[in-house]
Length: 302
Image 1 (cartoon, rainbow, N blue to C red):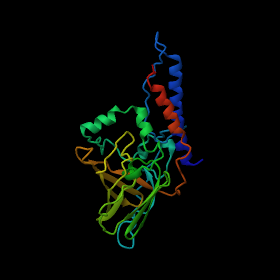
Image 2 (image 1 turned 90 degrees about the vertical axis):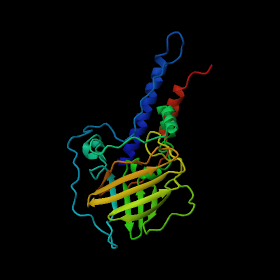
Image 3 (image 1 turned 180 degrees about the horizontal axis):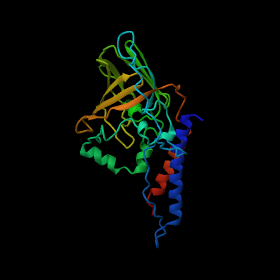
């Protein structure tokens, strides 16, 4: 069975179990004398697409070695081409969830600060219930992850294809893609908003810098409601320090929503040797289950 099947199944099953539990509670734990169900606030974690199976979190998960020098293209730049998996293992091993080798960064060594929201934006995020947050999450609604979500909210492998003057990114998740010119051209004068925005790349030594504007406001920057404005400006930095490793870091500016720019921890991807699979968001049972859970949490109507 392919990895996409197991990842989708894990998320849907977890959601349906939550609905079933809350339904049972609403039926059997009504408040005395009122006939009103006492429904606790559920805890819904960020879905990682991992299953609890024998060997889950196994300690023998191994990080790839560096693998020697990174290759270069005909124009002398480091070649970012390859199929890349999140974490240090070069594979998507669901039994290794929780292992250090599967993490993209160690928060003790490279901590990542929380989004520096302006007070009104922080309040907007805080006021959403966990169920509302899940229902509004772009991935639950089968929307593209966008930029920088194609990297930082994407647990699935990606493929990069680099030629002189051009980088293409293919995502297994919903088979999304983007094409980034790296020939030094400027941004368009007034680009139309798009899920992936308008990304323009240039090289700074061996680091590819991608500058993106005009990002569709329906995308989020994390799993928990980090929305953005039409003024969001994203700068991604990608480098390949060795054959087997890719390092990604992003800075997000959004003067309407944030008090200052936010920079992620450097996140690791590793070279894999499995082709991307076909994965589209269809027959979305997760959203239907969350809608039932939301309805159960609504106060009774008089």
